[in-house]
Length: 125
Image: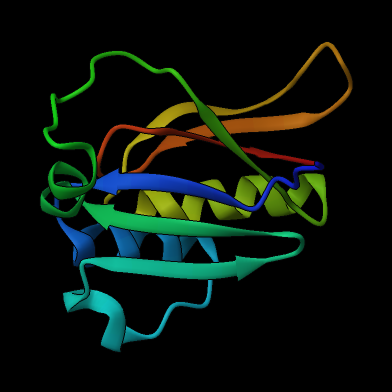
């Protein structure tokens, strides 16, 4: 029996607010999904899914709000300049910057923002 990585699921407090952030990030998500309890966005080789806390309560049989950062989503940008531009676009739309763009010791241009639910989102080139 083999397995294949297929989906990352993000639990959100407010679907529209979360999807608006990921739209600014650059994902194509129809506005008609804003009122859905479960949304999937196809990516190359996997799906990124969003579920409301209410949906997850039903699936898991309960839900306790997590504390701290346990997972990071990282998005590859086309260039070093694209990292800076995307960081400015996201923070310019009122979302939180966690760490401004910098040149990492491992050679990448890197920045970190937070989605509306506090998840750390890395941008790099």
